[in-house]
Image 1 (cartoon, one colour):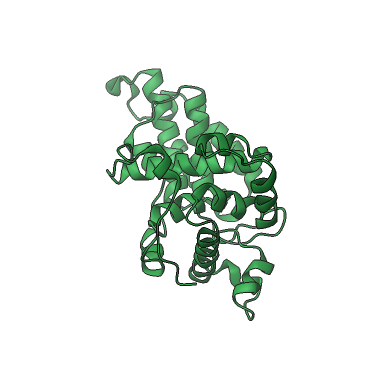
Image 2 (cartoon, rainbow, N blue to C red; image 1 turned 90 degrees about the vertical axis):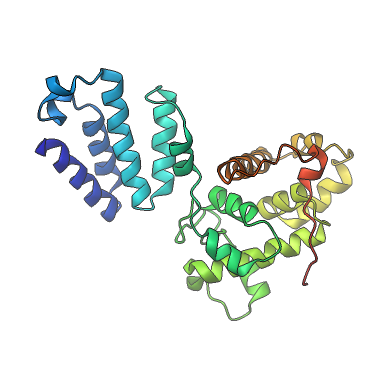
Length: 263
């Protein structure tokens, strides 16, 4: 019905204007529509209440995903799962773990598995090239302006919203950390999130085991500890979507990346 279609059109407008208040109001309106408000002939369709609710959520999720508003689509799926609106399947996993910028990463980096970088980007910026953190990190890979300048003196803060430049600098910094920690992905990810000085301190005082799971659980910052876990979760699902099983790799080996550094 026109009422339903117009509501979707309005939602597109609120997304374009980044009016989150009206966006949420529109979503609440949409998700509370009854079958008779959506379909021209609801009796002929004979749709169940559960399937109807599932369809409404699916349409909104697809709309966000198509507009590259990935964080919004992530939140909608999470909300839908929380209220048991639908079951998670491969279709929704592809929305939750998009392969955006995958080809660009492959062009920039020939050695490190692009899924590792993709998993980091998903956690850092949810693929928003204009993302700015509360501490001033910028772009897809959430690079601090000072870090960017240490690698490229002439780069400006404004330029860090350029996806290609941000990827090049972010990957270069990530490889520098990976080389510093001899391929140890746990240390590399923790340093990327919490800073190199803290990792050096933790290595001296806290990380006194060779068990990778113990090391992750002993990270003193909850944010960094969860950050490392979530990126490993991302890697798992991206590899699953790529049909590349990583379960045959010994657990200990999965926490290290072997590569020849160019630095």
